[in-house]
Image 1 (cartoon, rainbow over the protein chains, first blue to last red):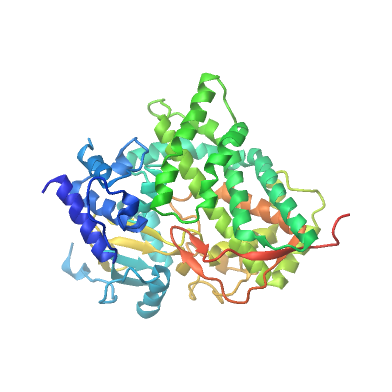
Image 2: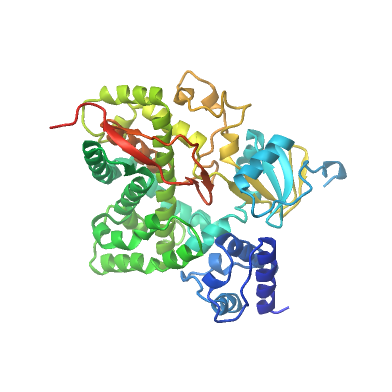
Length: 80
Length: 430
């Protein structure tokens, strides 16, 4: 499964578990408009760490928070 | 692991529903199952524990098997891998570099800025006492404690950064919007550091201490991005926790006039102006007891989560790798087997002659073990200074009769701001 697919799966699963109405996942979707709250994002990041073996928010020296869904996916795809 | 050890704790068959208040739900399960229960929370297997022996195992004896759990991801989104979030060898290096800045011996140097911020707040509330106006205690204390931490960190550069960081107090929700906004502020910190470096300027504030800190093994300073993350961690962690405790302290004092009178008597006996050293603070035992009792009843960090790396056993229960361990200072500090009349506000329980306050691991407001709060001594000093400086002049009246709502997010806050009316302890100064 590609990183993009793994990210999408976790967005959908966590949204369902947290009873959140998830917006259609497109690269230009702003995360603030995704329908998810900060707890949901924390759960997504935790599960992606289990699935992929890394957490770019902890590993990266960068400080910016991704603005769009596309930024979020690329954060994982470009992680070294 | 032997099969006879594979005993699991009792617990609810139903999963935790995300629309339930987690604080309330945990309390219901402890009442139903006792001091350890198993549950599915946010899609993860959780053991919630509520006794010192479990805390001792997870946070002290076998702490290396229990790094921070899922809840820390909420902080990581906001603060990156600062001291609260980082793990392993990197955390050890950062902790060694940061800890000296918070040593007790350095607290006296920070008392001036603590006094300055509290003097401003006191002046505002004395003005309200003169005019009979109501003050927003929650908001005013939040701003004052933000000022304290910003002045402690940035020293002479405070005026330049203060407007930028006001958002920390103004935005009460620690949501995604705040994360986006707050993470963008890191560049302000780097800018100040670069200016100091290019001017060859060293400073005795916390930013200066962290800029000067060197890794014990490599001799290197931390990167500017890491410096910014550590400073942002100090701002968030050092502001909301002390502000929340003082907010609850004023609520408790307003509801318990007998304790407020004892406090006034202790403060009236002190005739030497505002305390100027940590030696002065030692003389205020009742102030200290009040703050301990507020921390006991309303610990800001109401929930700590850890995650088992390897299979383990706690009190005969098998703990599979990956299990999250929930420890709630809120519940352990109200445990009826550990505290007499645990729901009552009773500052005297922290007096030297009462044994209950000295039970090991019954109080966890700053956590325990290697990953305890690095700023504990600074926080205690800030809270004592605030109470001494303001309560010597003023008492606060709270007319609301409804019990306050708890907002259990990252920290335990009051659901609504406390609006109170200040009154002079003695006749208003002419």
